[in-house]
Length: 145
Image: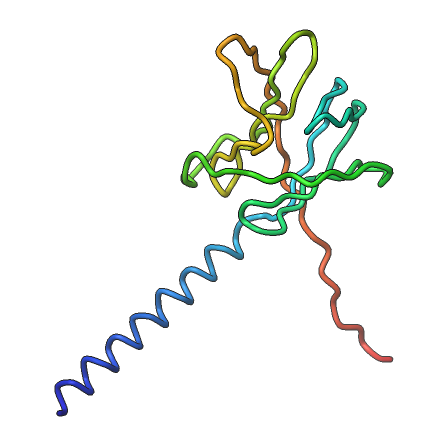
Protein backbone atom coordinates (compact mmCIF):
# COMPACT_ATOMS: atom_id res chain seq x y z
CA UNK A 1 0.00 0.00 0.00
CA UNK A 2 2.83 2.42 0.86
CA UNK A 3 4.52 1.69 -2.48
CA UNK A 4 1.36 2.65 -4.41
CA UNK A 5 1.02 5.88 -2.43
CA UNK A 6 4.66 6.76 -3.14
CA UNK A 7 4.24 6.13 -6.86
CA UNK A 8 1.05 8.21 -6.92
CA UNK A 9 2.74 11.11 -5.12
CA UNK A 10 5.72 10.91 -7.49
CA UNK A 11 3.37 11.01 -10.47
CA UNK A 12 1.55 14.07 -9.11
CA UNK A 13 4.85 15.83 -8.40
CA UNK A 14 6.12 15.08 -11.91
CA UNK A 15 2.87 16.38 -13.46
CA UNK A 16 3.18 19.62 -11.46
CA UNK A 17 6.79 20.10 -12.55
CA UNK A 18 5.85 19.62 -16.23
CA UNK A 19 2.90 22.01 -15.86
CA UNK A 20 4.98 24.74 -14.21
CA UNK A 21 7.77 24.36 -16.79
CA UNK A 22 5.24 24.57 -19.62
CA UNK A 23 3.67 27.71 -18.18
CA UNK A 24 7.08 29.32 -17.82
CA UNK A 25 7.93 28.55 -21.45
CA UNK A 26 4.58 29.84 -22.71
CA UNK A 27 4.92 33.09 -20.79
CA UNK A 28 8.40 33.76 -22.16
CA UNK A 29 7.12 33.97 -25.75
CA UNK A 30 5.71 37.26 -27.02
CA UNK A 31 2.05 37.15 -28.03
CA UNK A 32 2.18 40.29 -30.16
CA UNK A 33 4.24 41.31 -33.15
CA UNK A 34 4.38 44.25 -35.54
CA UNK A 35 4.90 44.20 -39.33
CA UNK A 36 5.40 47.11 -41.72
CA UNK A 37 3.93 46.06 -45.07
CA UNK A 38 5.09 48.28 -47.97
CA UNK A 39 2.35 47.12 -50.38
CA UNK A 40 -1.40 46.51 -50.39
CA UNK A 41 -2.41 42.89 -49.81
CA UNK A 42 -5.37 40.54 -49.57
CA UNK A 43 -6.71 38.25 -46.85
CA UNK A 44 -9.72 36.09 -47.74
CA UNK A 45 -10.77 38.48 -50.51
CA UNK A 46 -10.41 41.58 -48.30
CA UNK A 47 -8.00 44.21 -49.63
CA UNK A 48 -5.83 45.90 -47.00
CA UNK A 49 -3.63 48.96 -47.59
CA UNK A 50 0.11 49.15 -47.06
CA UNK A 51 1.09 50.15 -43.53
CA UNK A 52 1.98 48.97 -40.05
CA UNK A 53 -0.04 46.13 -38.56
CA UNK A 54 -0.17 44.52 -35.12
CA UNK A 55 -0.60 40.75 -34.91
CA UNK A 56 -2.11 39.66 -31.60
CA UNK A 57 -2.16 35.91 -30.86
CA UNK A 58 -5.46 35.15 -29.15
CA UNK A 59 -5.19 31.34 -29.33
CA UNK A 60 -2.68 28.94 -30.91
CA UNK A 61 -4.52 28.99 -34.26
CA UNK A 62 -6.22 32.39 -34.08
CA UNK A 63 -4.51 35.77 -34.60
CA UNK A 64 -6.09 39.20 -34.76
CA UNK A 65 -4.49 41.55 -37.30
CA UNK A 66 -5.07 45.29 -36.71
CA UNK A 67 -3.75 48.34 -38.50
CA UNK A 68 -1.63 50.58 -36.30
CA UNK A 69 -4.15 53.42 -36.68
CA UNK A 70 -6.98 51.08 -35.59
CA UNK A 71 -9.09 51.57 -38.73
CA UNK A 72 -8.71 48.01 -40.07
CA UNK A 73 -9.04 44.64 -38.40
CA UNK A 74 -8.98 41.09 -39.77
CA UNK A 75 -9.29 37.65 -38.14
CA UNK A 76 -6.63 35.12 -39.14
CA UNK A 77 -7.27 31.42 -38.71
CA UNK A 78 -4.10 29.36 -39.00
CA UNK A 79 -2.95 25.78 -39.49
CA UNK A 80 0.34 24.98 -37.78
CA UNK A 81 2.74 23.48 -40.33
CA UNK A 82 5.94 23.31 -38.25
CA UNK A 83 6.66 23.17 -34.53
CA UNK A 84 8.50 25.93 -32.67
CA UNK A 85 12.30 25.93 -32.78
CA UNK A 86 14.84 27.58 -30.51
CA UNK A 87 15.65 30.64 -32.68
CA UNK A 88 13.05 30.76 -35.42
CA UNK A 89 13.09 33.30 -38.23
CA UNK A 90 10.41 35.86 -37.34
CA UNK A 91 8.49 36.88 -40.43
CA UNK A 92 5.23 37.06 -42.28
CA UNK A 93 5.24 35.57 -45.77
CA UNK A 94 3.18 37.06 -48.59
CA UNK A 95 2.58 35.26 -51.88
CA UNK A 96 2.67 37.23 -55.12
CA UNK A 97 0.14 35.88 -57.62
CA UNK A 98 -1.17 37.66 -60.72
CA UNK A 99 0.35 40.95 -59.57
CA UNK A 100 -1.36 40.85 -56.14
CA UNK A 101 0.09 40.05 -52.71
CA UNK A 102 -1.74 37.57 -50.47
CA UNK A 103 -1.10 37.01 -46.75
CA UNK A 104 0.18 33.42 -46.61
CA UNK A 105 2.19 32.40 -43.52
CA UNK A 106 3.49 33.46 -40.12
CA UNK A 107 6.85 32.21 -38.85
CA UNK A 108 7.05 33.05 -35.16
CA UNK A 109 7.91 31.92 -31.66
CA UNK A 110 5.02 29.43 -31.97
CA UNK A 111 6.34 27.73 -35.11
CA UNK A 112 5.31 28.05 -38.73
CA UNK A 113 1.61 28.55 -39.50
CA UNK A 114 -0.29 28.73 -42.79
CA UNK A 115 -3.31 31.00 -43.20
CA UNK A 116 -6.21 28.54 -43.51
CA UNK A 117 -7.99 30.56 -46.21
CA UNK A 118 -4.95 30.64 -48.53
CA UNK A 119 -3.69 27.76 -50.67
CA UNK A 120 -0.14 28.18 -51.98
CA UNK A 121 0.50 27.35 -55.64
CA UNK A 122 3.73 26.24 -57.28
CA UNK A 123 4.04 29.44 -59.35
CA UNK A 124 3.74 31.80 -56.37
CA UNK A 125 6.65 34.11 -55.63
CA UNK A 126 7.07 35.07 -51.98
CA UNK A 127 7.98 38.23 -50.11
CA UNK A 128 9.05 38.08 -46.45
CA UNK A 129 8.30 40.93 -44.02
CA UNK A 130 10.15 40.91 -40.66
CA UNK A 131 7.99 40.32 -37.58
CA UNK A 132 9.09 42.41 -34.57
CA UNK A 133 8.12 41.50 -31.01
CA UNK A 134 5.87 43.94 -29.16
CA UNK A 135 5.88 44.00 -25.37
CA UNK A 136 2.47 44.40 -23.78
CA UNK A 137 2.12 47.19 -21.26
CA UNK A 138 1.26 45.73 -17.90
CA UNK A 139 -0.40 47.93 -15.32
CA UNK A 140 1.79 48.39 -12.26
CA UNK A 141 0.35 49.10 -8.83
CA UNK A 142 0.55 52.74 -7.83
CA UNK A 143 1.82 54.12 -4.55
CA UNK A 144 -1.52 55.35 -3.23
CA UNK A 145 -5.11 55.71 -4.30
